[in-house]
Length: 412
Image 1 (cartoon, rainbow, N blue to C red):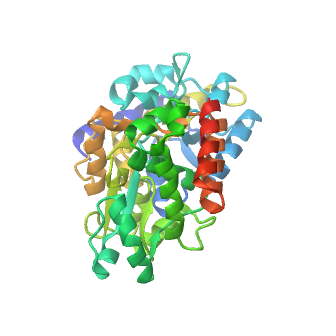
Image 2 (cartoon, rainbow, N blue to C red):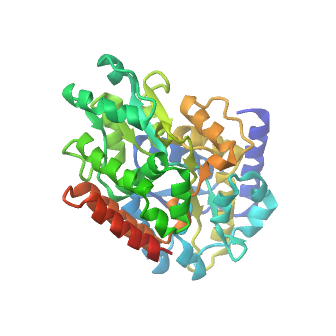
Image 3 (tube, rainbow, N blue to C red):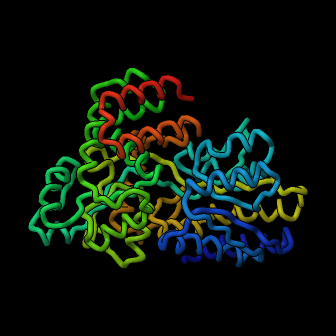
């Protein structure tokens, strides 16, 4: 830590002990893999050092966690803070007046000037007020490859999806699963979105986010469905229900050649002492369109049941800590994500993180995520379609695309 970030951290800690008494803060999140646990510890340590106590409320799996978190808040049993995706997950709770307003902290600390891209903070706004703090930039637009598996089998490491698909039959002959997949709903849906950009093109992706049903019926979108159908033949029989980090583990150990997964997978490579460019490679946009869909994680702070002012003050102190330079650097280096602040020193970033940072420098390479474009209901319909299509070979490309068009026509 340099003198500047140390001074900021010291100031934050001093203000924490002066503003409010020590408070136990129950924090819910779904960061339970090895890499995620190492990252969340950075946040917990910062909160504990501030004089408050981080009471961990980890819930395995985002699909399990979200409904439980929302149910508790709406049912009058709020936690002090909770992770949710940057986007519309908490929209109804904010409208119902169940979230602590962070506008005073955001304005005092100039979040609008330091958080990039601006749409991340915009996703926290409702009627001009700020109700969450983005903590990272995550993108699903990555493919991870085990370099040594390719080298051991006398093959060049693929630089794009086409080369990877061409290598898949030889990998299968060598007894290696070409594509490691986890069959959870969000994983299959996320992989489909990656194909939309890589094979359908950036304009297709942007048009679908704008609910353009004509593009949903286009030949470009047909290519996406055909590629996903082909990917069915690249996976092993045990993919159904597999956790994402277990699929990442298959790549790390050489049981699989590659995985399409968000940049949080990098945390698993880090825990396994893998080195980017030596042990593994990364292809943003499947090596075809090097873009990032800038989703990520944000923390919301549900209003205490009794509007306890000490808890509210502690919530705002925690929000300030999460966006501080020190926490932003340390957390994101372990998480594999990119910081929301554009003014931090990431000299120690690895080769893959540097690829992501370079992409962020060009606005045309930054895409919205589904969480920012579609309501929870529309997201659910899309997820159901992608899961059914991937799991059921009898569902034809034509029929699946027709259903996709209907969903986009009715999307909100």
